[in-house]
Each structure stands twice: as C-alpha cells, then as structure tokens.
Amino acid sequence: MYAVVGGIGFGVLYFLSFKCAWSFCPNHRSHVSILLMGSFCLSSFFGSRLSSSLINPNNKQPFNYVVNDHQQEMFYDKHSDEVQRVPQMLRSMSLFALILFSVALLLIDHKHEKNSPASENSELE
Image (cartoon, rainbow, N blue to C red; front, side, top):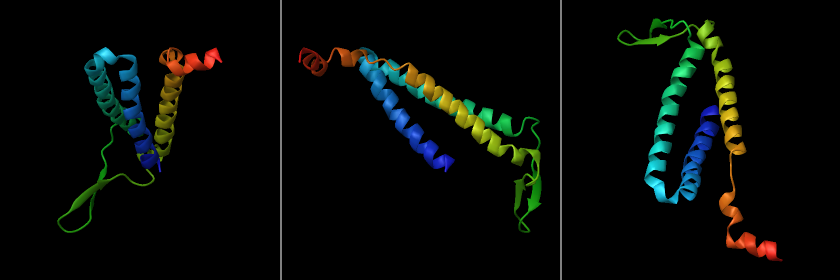
C-alpha cells in the first residue's frame, strides 16, 4: 500500500513541480529542470540513507540461511530489533513527507492567476 500510494503521489508531484516551476520561470526552463531533477535524485539517495539508519542504526549484519544446497540468503530474525523498527520507519518517513508537502502548500503563490484575463473579467462584473 505504501509503495503504490507513494509511487503514484511522487509521480504526480514530479510532473506538477515541473509545470509550476516552468510557469513561474519561463525564461529559465532548463535551469529549473536541472534543479528539480537533481533534487528528486538526491531525495531518493538521502531517503534511502535515512530509512536505513532508522531501521538499523547499529549497522548489524543479517544472518545467513541456507535455502538450498547451493543458495544462501541473508535475513534478519523476525523478532530482531531491525525488523521491529520497520513500521516506525514507515511512519517517520510518511510524517516527514507530510511536513514537506504541507510547507510546499503554504508556499504556493498565485501571482500569475491575478494577472490573467479571466480574473480581470470577473472583477469587472
């Protein structure tokens, strides 16, 4: 659920951020695009580091389990502290995203809508 809703939400935000940035900086579209793409790339890099540090702050290594004769897989024990921290990490990351989205909503400026012809016609009536 988190992956599906988060993926759709971040996908929509990705394209909306370009549209909004291009409407406010029409003469610097390439600079704005580079800045936005870089920020999205860095957010995934730092987000993975943050989630890993929330789940496994002591950097414990998982255990080796032999599945077949030739194949080994590494897992944490289901009762380990690392596994127990996953729900809290998801809540923390969701709260962090909610705070960022709330700040972004508060910073929305509708300066272009005030100067549009449609808003001038409605003010005259």
